[in-house]
Length: 139
Image (cartoon, rainbow, N blue to C red; front, side, top):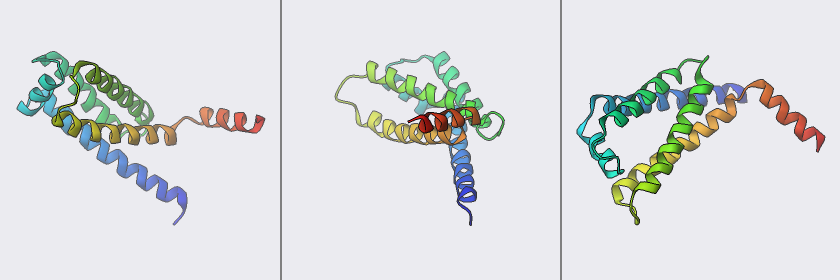
């Protein structure tokens, strides 16, 4: 099997898994599940249902667009930026040392960030790939 084929299969598996993750988690936020409300209180947002709704919508739409090849790159970038912003905001809001519940969420979120970063790198537009190659050739 060719390396390019294996790479495409792995990327598709990552897309599907991430899409499921974002759609399920975003859906829980949209319906206002008790667990998500507890997490938002733990993160320092209180009982802010509008923030949970906005984050849930971004996650559901981002999860769906991860499966659409035309929007995949921009969806991965948007979800990556959203996660970085939310994680940095949580770090500023919570008290130290971190509660075990927060640690249990930040580790999977960090793994998700790493996967999104890999996806963005593999899907970067050809113009950016050419620019990187020309920079290497100049050196």
